[in-house]
Amino acid sequence: MRSSELTDAPIRVELLGDAWVLARLNGVISVFVDKCPHRNARLSDGCIVRDQLQCPYHGWEFDSAGTCTHIPALGEGATVPPTSRLQPSAHVQEKYDLIWIAPENPVCDILDIPEWSDPTLSAVWMPSIDIKATAGQFIDNFLDFGHFPFVHTGTFGAGEDENISPYEVQPAMNGWGFTVDYHHFINNHEDPLVATGKNPLLQPRVMKYSFGAPFICCLRLELPLANQINAIAIFLQPLDAHSTRLYCAMLRNDFTDQASRDAAVAYELAVLAEDIGILEHLWDNEIPLEVGQAHTRADRNTVEFRRIMSRLLA
Image (cartoon, rainbow, N blue to C red):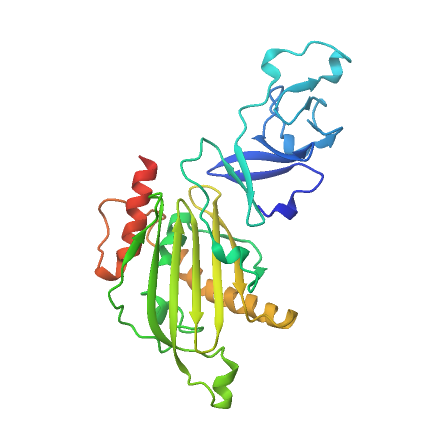
């Protein structure tokens, strides 16, 4: 979830079909299974009292470590039962203006996105969106650039070359990600100098994909002739086995005012709608990791994505 969404009240979030409660206690983000050990009430329906998470049912209070510090029915100073402790908490981290939780010990770090700290780029968040597709399916779609001329005919894909030239996949040093650099030409309708005749419509573009397990991607689009940089950072929250919450931030060097920001968001939402129109109607919600799908040389990056996910699951 966005860091700004967690204020002075507990919030319930869903991840992989499980419910968690997040709260800022003593200035620290604490995460627990969203269930009071007393009578299974949702702690996220409670409140924060004296930097303690208070259950809405019987007022039990818990500190940032999950220890029960007060049971009103027993009076002040009473000994609380050992079973009153909250279920084990998740690992939590704040990065990229987001709150991340890992229910078990993290296997790998969060993907490094250098553009996030680039002072020449400005970040604009799109509204979070829930889609009826799995996180793996969205990553598979985001990494794939062979679908551009067919799925995105209403936005940027019209007239794009259908042929995918050979490209290399560079594994990350930690083994849990990769990058792809792809050079090609596109019709750059966003370049204002095209209308003046100073720049041609057909321009070179460099696409750099970065993937980090399990569900983080960044696509850097650079148009050197127009001096345009647009990095699209994608973060996915698998809600359950059938749905995903999508967080997307754009990091660009061509925002001039709020109108340009609003126009960029509207355009990316239109692109996203084209992808969702395909993803929400696929045959099933699975990404086969060994057999079950045909692949070509144009699918090298999505095949590598499957290899990494297979190792992660193992």
